[in-house]
Amino acid sequence: MNVRRTRTTMTALAAAALLVLTGCTKASDGAQQESNQNIAKLTGSTAFNDAKLGELAGKIKAAVQGKDLASVRVAMVINSPSAYWTEGRTGMENAAKELGVQANFQAPAGGDLNTQLSILDTLRADKIDGYTVSAVDPKAVAGPVGTAQKAGIGVVAIDSPLSGTAEPTVYLGTPNTDAGQQAGEAMKTLLNGTGKVAILTGSLTAENAVQRIAGFKKALEGTNVQIVDTLNDDADPSKALSNAQAALQANPDLNAFYTVWSYDGPAAGQAVKAAGKSGKVLIVADDAEPKTVEFVKDGTVQAMILQRPYQQGYLGVYVLTALKVLGKDATNELLKPYLEQKDGASTLSSGIGLVTGDNLQTYLDDLKKLGVTS
Image (cartoon, rainbow, N blue to C red; front, side, top):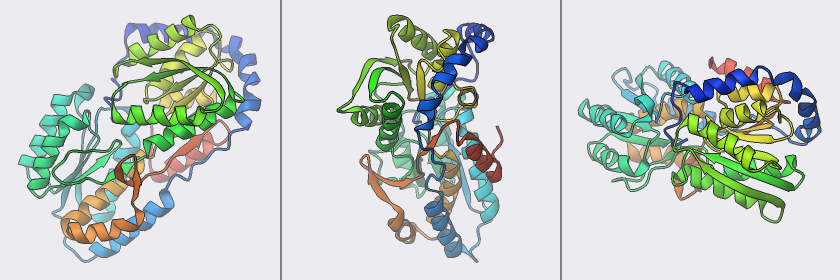
């Protein structure tokens, strides 16, 4: 997510909620079984866009074959040190090893914007050849990115598009409106077209959040699914938990949550499970935080709408290497057949996954094959 995605420590509030959870599992077993029929209606998918992006990587590798790559230096700059980015880092490392280039991973502590800006300035001063960036604030990083581009540094946006830069940037990631729409379709199926939903999000203004929520609402048009709350936690996981608890208290007849940022899924899951409503209040969650995966396993979360951070790391290295070795024009020719215009950005889509309890193990096995460990 363009997001200061999560803090690595949990507050006393979140810890207290976890203690409550230990006494709720048995009480919710029957409720979880109630949702099994609904879960079965969802058709999961873990293909993402791996086939096409793998084809593109192969073309780039062939184009740079025989070139001196040992001196190529690239970086991956994320928005916050979250478990979400474990896949991305592994992808970056795998690609760097395959190509024989140097790559380093940079994460601003706590998702701090000033720290990210400092990282970008340091990379430019160090004359890095290129970097991918998941911006904490796309508007704030547009200036430093533009300065880097003018200095001949290749830049690819990941996780969330960038606009207002000196040169247009390719966006490598999930089309957010499409992802939100897929979440809405899943919710519509789970609720049989009727019910009350609360949305948890880390921002009401961040581009990816706005686009996902818009896509979610679009999918629900013409149904009897009503959005009763949209609660902003300002990128604070502890506030996300309290928002989920508040939504349950304010809406005793709440049927479901849609969670937009990665830590919002665990927050909703903790609140629902602590309230003894697993399987009664359903959850469609963006992203596969480790705790969200656990909640899918026990039936608290019914579906995860997934990005492919692995490809954001992996293909990002390939594209940056091509920009350095082949130049912009030749690289753009390679990318052209794979680009789509999505959400106003020239997009290399990493695809969208839908994971339920039925295909969760397939998804986890695929990650292991890529070398991703939690």
